[in-house]
Length: 424
Figure 1 (spheres, one colour):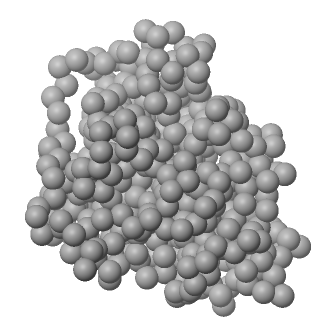
Figure 2 (figure 1 turned 90 degrees about the vertical axis):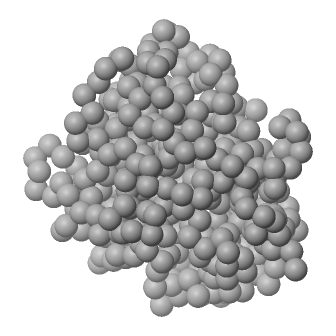
């Protein structure tokens, strides 16, 4: 059902053209060089040493799960987001009946809309604010903060709500929707290009708009102030540029995450016609990266023209094409303790096909971080973690998540939630 679609591209190019971009001629979205060579390493099965890794099903039945997270240093709870507007609490492994927050009457559910992101303040519970990202009834992006109820931390205090950010959305897709805090303590907000198809507003290459960008906001501000601009954001003081921008040239960043150990930022960007990609911003970056949309998609493949000027563009480190899937779901770098052999592997998946893959980035050398091709351990876990014929796999992977200990979960919009585990 279209109203229940997650924040991703449609499963096929035909559906994409007919449903998401009905006013765009087919010819407009098929201008590419058919001689582009593949430049991402092949993905083989993981080595035999990883044979005991599996996905352990969780006994939590929720509707349209789109994210999982946990309060810092709280090993007793995880929080689940339902696309329809509920924030659910799992305490001691048990899903509580009452939601932590209920935004169902305020959330729009057309196309890729809904309750999409959640982040705890890094000093929680000393700073008890929790940040939510959703699309409101007008279809616009809203970022708000809430605090736990004085009567118990498993319920939000509705009176504590404060608006942090509101962004007009011209169409109902490509909302982005994720939130996370960086090692620097700032809030990172990813926004897509505004939707439809082919970026008709040119948002990806427009630094005068918040769309198509990664924002970096200081939310440790006096009461009544939504946010402040970090003084070292790259476009502070640049006339005509939005100072909130940290990076730009993104189509629809559907899940991004900081590596807990290195501080590198991994951004999965949903592609248009042919390629999905993962971008990596190294720790210590001064920001300002242009990831190329709508000039290119994937590893330098020109979008509308056979030749395009790619000066100054930052290339992704990994891409894949339509032979693998059609809508990337970004993940996390595993830093948990239950399956230590996975440490340092970045996992991602595809919503359409159920593929699950990993890579290790940087080759062990800090200078390699963010460099295209500087990847290894490019493994395809699908046969091991999501076995069965392609048509019988669990699909609709909506998100990865982490608990406070760094253990990794993967969620399907169809309902199942799994944890990465190892058989004994």
